[in-house]
Image (tube, rainbow, N blue to C red; front, side, top):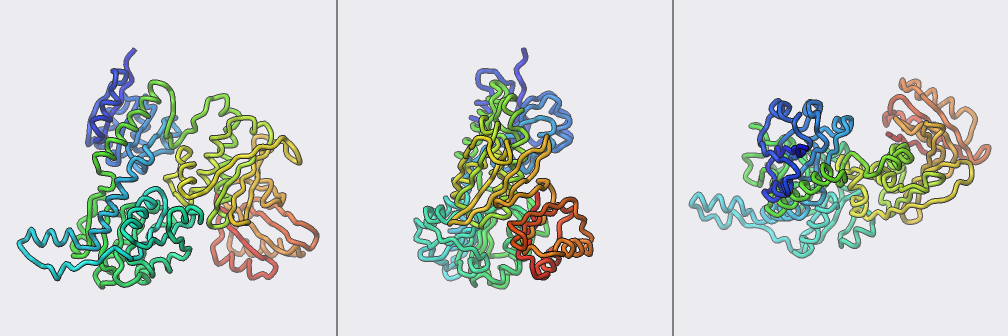
Length: 530
């Protein structure tokens, strides 16, 4: 029987290649720099593919990969892999979470020091035969205020180094618990504008999501403390590069250092290239011998495990469960992710805990994949596309969120039920779901019985139970050309407090929400996107 073939399409460490080929069980080929059409031509022969960030594993590549079983990304992000296309084809996509943490934190801190002392510029001056001591007067790190935007693994490592240098660390992370912040010795701030106005240095360690795109834009850069220095080794797009260029020119930002860019490599019209107070590196955060050797060996071991043993580890698109268990809990995996996403949108800001309670037959199975799916949904807004069913527990732990499961025998109104609750400091929320035949339904929100489809756009209204309220809401929605696809009403007593859940065809804009709140007896209105 021929050995399965593995193609290494991007550079990984020599030890990683050796690990792949160990014992001759896999036939390993290294072909670097393949363009899409070249990769499409050769990929049909391979069962495994190893990439870093250069090679794009597009839907066309996956369609041509008739024997492909696994794609291994030697790194954290899988932005260059069409995960949905791979999942549809039953191809496992794996990454190496955590392998670059120290290298990226160290590189970001090196850039921090470079901006404080103008080291690259002073070096260039000396190389040009000059002696400009006064021109390159810097600032100390000691006693300065550092703002960290994003307190995941890399942000936490950066904070440890800054504290060792005597810096005062403040942080912004809407999903970091207060307990975790205290353990990291950082002051947590809720107001991003307040944070940037107090910081002498700002470093970004956020994922790139709809919410974080251009989080340092022109408006926010006008609110920074004059003379601030900014470092971004996280994701291109977190900082508006054009706005940063203007702030560097007028002196509001004294210096900046970037390792990531909105377009990589930056084009000829890149606005920051020629500025004297900028330090630029070509996406080197993970480029150390130790990091590359670590991720190379890690991805090699994971691919060998899949192709030779059938064992899945660090998969971003598949749970690690057998077929019998999957048949029982499979429907709950999708429902769990939706309930987690729902709860994240109504939960208090800094959740300390998440609990998943299982009732009925599902409680007798290994529900680990379901819990991971819940966390994937719950953390989606906090972590963005980087969260998956493999790394979700680690992401939750990094944010200081305690995750528990509980189980009860079938009782009450439902023989099968899954309830997701979350909270902190005495405040909690919960959402429960079950199945009506094969159809999933949300059946309880904060102990109020409802019936709603867990998909699309939901509008939650809390109001005083008065005649005509539903009609007024329907009229306002109709005036904005928004169709109601489903409705569920619940009240604690006649004339008391009522909860209305509407499934809508399209999401209402903020102006409509304000109109609804202005009706008088509607106390809150939340739009939930599932």
